[in-house]
Structure formats: C-alpha cells, structure tokens
Image (tube, rainbow, N blue to C red):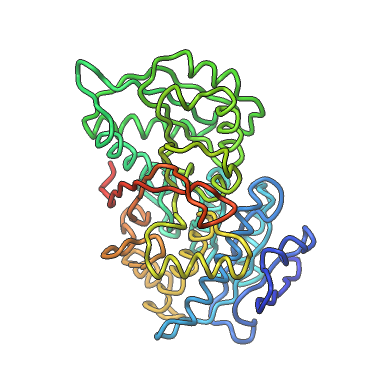
Length: 415
C-alpha cells in the first residue's frame, strides 16, 4: 500500500527548508483536500540523491502554479497533487506511477527528470489509460511520430535546442564551403549525448552551415576527472567547442577547464542546459564570461511582469532562485488545469486529449507577443528559445554571472 502523504504549510516559511528537513521516505500532498478535490494528480521527481535539486525545485514550482491559478479571474478545477520521491530508480518510478493511478485514482501523472526512466513511465501510464505530462526530461524519442496518445511534454526537448543552436551558429560564426567551421564536441556517453550530437549535425546541415568535425569525445556520466578530455580539446584547432554535459558534470568540467585555460582556446557553447541557474549559482565567479549558453527557462529573460512574478514567488517560498526544472513543473500543473477547464472535470479521455492537443499556454518564459502552444502531432510544446552569453551580473545571488547579449529563436518545424 502506498505511503501516507504529508501536507505542508506555506505561510511565512521556506518551503525548500521544510522539504530538506523532511525524512527521506516522506511523500508530499499539495492543493485541495481529498474531500474537495475534483481531480487527482501524481507527480514523480527525485527528492533525494543525484538530481534531488531538480525535484525539490519542481515541488516549489508546483506550489507556485497553484498560487498563480488562484490569482486568475476564471475558475480552475480543484486539484489534489501527490508528489513522491523516485530516487532516480526506474523500477521504483514505474511502480509509483502505477500506484498513483490504481490506488490514488490519479488521472494525470507528471514530472520525471531522467529521459530513460520517462520512456518506461510513458508505457506504464499509457497502459493505465492515464495522461503523462512530461515536465523536465528532454529526449525527442517521446515526441516522434506515432507518439503515445496519453503523453504530452511541456518543456522543449533537446532536438529543439539543437535546431535553435544551428540557427545561432549560422548567425554568429563565419563559414563557407572552402573554409568550413571547425567544431569539437563533447557529450556524455549515453543516449542523451549521442542524440544531441546527431540532432546538431542534422540541424547544421539543414541550416546550410558548412562545418567539419574536429573531434567528438564521450566521457562517462558523473566523470570525476575531465583532464584527458580537456587536453584533447586543446590539442585540436577548433572554431567552436560544443558541450552537452549538464548539472554537476558541467560544473566540474568548467571548473577543471578554468584550471587548464581551456576557454582561451576557442569559443565554448552549451545550448541545452548550460544556462541553467543551478550551474550559474554553483560556479559563481568561476563561471567564465563570454560562454554561449541556454536553458529551458531563464530567470532574467524575458523581462516581463509574469516572469518576474514567477521568479520572485519561487524565491519567497524557497529562499533561492529557481532552476529550469521549476518552470517545467509550473507549466505541467497549468497544462492540466487548462485542459480540464476547457474539457471539463468529468470529460472522457478523448475530450481531454483534444484539449491538450489544442493547448495554448502563456508561460513565464514566453516573450511578449508569443504564447507557448502544443503541437497536436508530436505532443511537444512549441516555445521560443533564447541563447545568450555569460556576463557579470549580481542581481540574482549567489550567481555572479547571468546571460545577456541574447539571440532569440521562435519555434520552427522539425523533421
């Protein structure tokens, strides 16, 4: 039987502090009480161990979404949201997903950080005829043709990041048939790294960028020592070094790259996760200036009232500024609420699917004049991607570098 859920208070206290003080086995319930709830949602995130920050930020993001919905002039369904610690374990995550549906009567499952685990969860949730709202994982394999009718993703995938990257490279670097752009690549030695590299090369070709591959390097996930890879990069004449590490691995790589003067060798870019606030805040002054970075949400872009409200509300609840995982979770809850507002809380699966396929969702990351929307064929949300360069900025401590010098790319159809 599923573990009991703990309801958390939010007034005048740090939600993140409460979460960190909770027992590792504790699960969380947010939103409406059981007797008031019109719909039940089960969310799956790592709340401990590696990836725990993404889960903790997602919990706060969910509460921020509930706060936002209360401020709106329309009535949204009352949701009871259960959140369980997956501990980043595939078998545990799929078991929890099944229990949410069967024992908690959850009609929606949301979350999941790891793409490999998300693929397994998608199969389980589809077999249970519940909806899976992906909020953080990025594999394009879940939004390819013949997509599950029960899966929808509300943050951009890694393929979208690479297609924006190709447009940025075309705009920013000189290249020609006689003088192709020399690219070095380093990515983690598993599906995410290989898929990114494949998608980037395809995107560069479609964008008409003349390039040559100098080297492609594949360190292990959680590699402790990048010295051999850094030295290999320095030995090759490159016009651009592209990196697809993320989280603590990227932090460690940049710290070790600083010691080896890597960033004087050639321009450096990480187009999918490098601009995440987690990375900026961990590195502080050790983040070099001039790196080309992006992420799925930026705390200082766009400079809209909505984005400022989201960032400050998160800070009020947690005492820190959000990683991009928080806005993904925020978007997931809004997507569920909006689809039920349109279809009705008693709608059947076909009616909910139709509402999700036609979803338009204004999010903190949307610049003025643009609203995120769902592609009805791939079930992949379409969003603007902003790419910037690291520069001194102490407005969101403890980070002392934020991104600026933005280039902004609206969504484009993918093959």
